[in-house]
Length: 263
Ligand SMILES: Nc1nc2c(c(=O)[nH]1)N[C@H]1C(S)=C(S)[C@@H](COP(=O)(O)O)O[C@H]1N2
Ligand SMILES: [Mo]
Image 1 (cartoon, protein in one colour):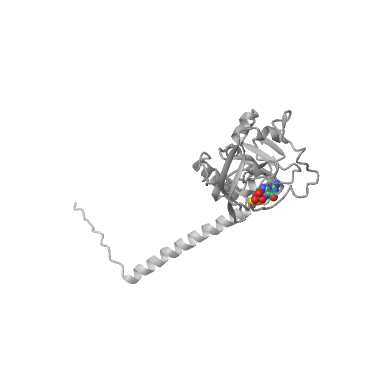
Image 2 (image 1 turned 45 degrees about the vertical axis):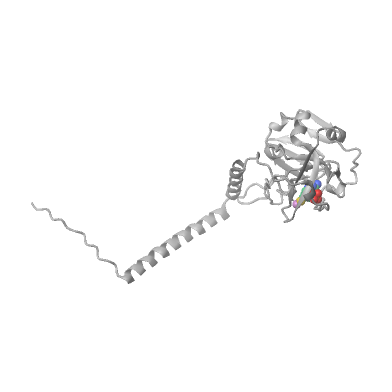
C-alpha cells in the first residue's frame, strides 16, 4: 500500500479576508471583556453590604479588597521605615489650626484637673498626671504634617515617645493587643491605631509645639503625633487610652475615610 502524503496547502489570505478576521477577533474580545465587566459590576452592586460601624458601609467584597491591599502595602513598607525629618529652622512658626471636634465646647474640661486615663484591662486602669509624663526623657521631631484635606506643613513637636511611655508605665503586655484606641475626655473625637503605628519610633505623646507648651487649640495638655499617619489620626487632647484586638471606633472611619489613613 502506498501512503499518500497529502501536503496541506495553505492558501494565503487576501488582504480583505485578513481585515475581516481581525475585525471579528477584536469585536469578539471587546464584547467578551465588556460582558465580564458588566457582569462583575452587577455582582458587586448585588453583593451584601458590610455591616456599617467601624467603617462607613460599602459592598463587602470591595471592603475585603481594600483591606487586603492595605495589609499588603503595610507589610511591604514596614513600620520600621522612618519618615523624613527636617532641621528646626525649617519648621513653620504659624501652625495651622484645623478642626476642633471634642475640644471646643467642652466647658467641663479643666486642664489642671486633667489626668491621662489608661484603661489597661477591665479591672485595671492608670490615671497619669502630666508631671509624670513631662518627667520622662523628651523626644522632638520636625516633620511634614499632612492633612487629608490637602494641606501640609513642616511642624516641630516635643513630648515623650510612645515607646518610652509604654515601657516606663509597664504597658508592654497591654500593647501586645492589635489596636490602641484614643479618645478626647468627652469622647466626641476618637481614633483607632494599629499597634505598629502607635509603637513606631517617631510616634510621640506631645506636650510641646515649637519648643513651647502646647496651646488648647492644638490639643493641650497632651496630644498624639503619629507621623506615619494623616492628620485625622493625630488626636488632640487625649483623655483615655485603651487596648484591644478589635478595631476601636474611629471618628473619620465612621464617615467613610480609610481606617488606617497611613502615609
Ligand atoms: N480632638 C480632635 N483632634 C483632632 C481633630 C479634631 O477635630 N479634634 N482634627 C484632626 C485633624 S483632621 C487634623 S489635620 C489635625 C490638625 O491639628 P492642628 O489643628 O493642631 O493643626 O488634628 C487632628 N486631631
Ligand atoms: Mo485633617
